[in-house]
Picture 1 (tube, each protein chain N blue to C red):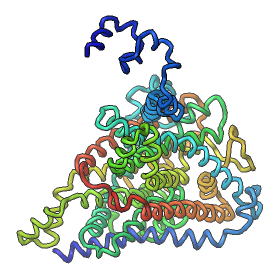
Picture 2: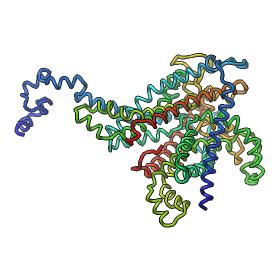
Picture 3: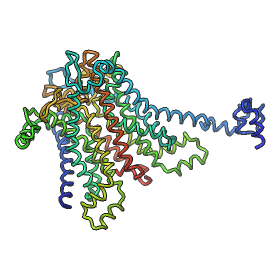
Picture 4: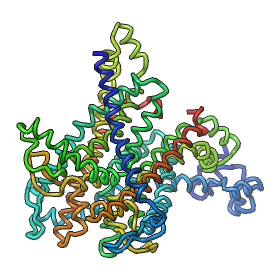
Length: 353
Length: 273
């Protein structure tokens, strides 16, 4: 103790090693290499020095921070490259209907409309089905069938977007044109949503293919969340004399509703940004139309389709601004969804595969 | 009510499995009949001629994916190591974890235009730009799986190593990463399978190429791009090749996903986690 106090008198001149091993005379510590014990030297040569640990931690931290860098870089570069269009149209860009590359007149409203309609319709189709699958897998399915069926539904998520598009172009579009479309027109034509010429490509076809694509995401997350509901909850409801359905409704669904909403929002995030399959079947026509048979355009598909043919700087800038809007919207949707899913599954056992 | 809900749930499952069956059936039915040796050994034939294959696209996809994996996987694993081993409870680590999750949901086309603006605009389309775009997509997936897998490694093993005087960095590599390696490999394969089928980020970075090219600073062909172009083209011959390409792509992805299942099921961690 007394030695340390002695050193404390003149801390600026004492070398760091002296603090670690205060027995050493300060004069000897100045010629460090001689004083390092053979054991320490051996450990240093095997990478056991303090430097090795510090630099390892620093490299790991650097890589972790690269995730921030990626997000910052995307935002910066999108803002920088869309400044022409930001300056020319301002906020009105998102409420204007015009899309005339020749006259240099741009507005994003038709794409926002197309994106919203297809995503919402896709969710309307996918959510009930996904909930059904999740309920079946967690509560009703016989044990031996559970793993294969969940594997198969997750296989749907592994199919690339362009293969969905290919299938939709050659299989789904003819079915829509010749079978499903006329049927809907005959039975539901009075609503006004199924009117006009039906070529097979259009918002309805895009929504169906989107629904198939977001389904595995929603159903697997919902399944995880429902699995995280403790069994005591189920038993408690059953003990009160509930039927199986009442048990699912009161014991399981009510407990996991926040997580399920989160899962649906993650599906929405995917649906909003889905590009290839939608581009291949939506018809690519910038027009707002009530009929779901009508061809339309989404934010992502206009970028995919027109980016490489954008001739003027303003045109390119407008497309990048659409990309920026898409990026910000999906970030917000995903952030909210993640928070919701976290709120429910935090502390629960990991994914039961 | 009980029976109604049960029936509806079973029905929903059947409806969901139906498109999967339909897609796989068409892939095999249309793809297998168009698949031949030429597909793997020839470059695309000039427009209007019969025959030709996608040799350049298969090799191009391989090059782009190798580039992406060599950039994305090390960064992702390192970031996961930071989150699991150095950052417990820190605000920075939580922020990084959250950002990674959010980045995971960013549409791939946005990655495409960002990398276009950085590496292509003013220069030219290149395989390297395509690799960078896919690498960015791999990082969050790899990071999160690595972290989750490292978290399942029992603390006792780590403490045993540290107690023997092994430095921390060596403990992380030889004990943490090694014990968790089956799970981490699973994560890397999943990330690989995910980006292998991506088309949107490659549209404006790798661009595609009808000719043989393996140069990193020139436009390069990729399987998903070629499928996209051929599917929307007007010729039957192109459609035939698109189906064959889709079958090859899906087999590539299925094989990696199945390997993942085997790894995950036989993993060292099965008992521990």
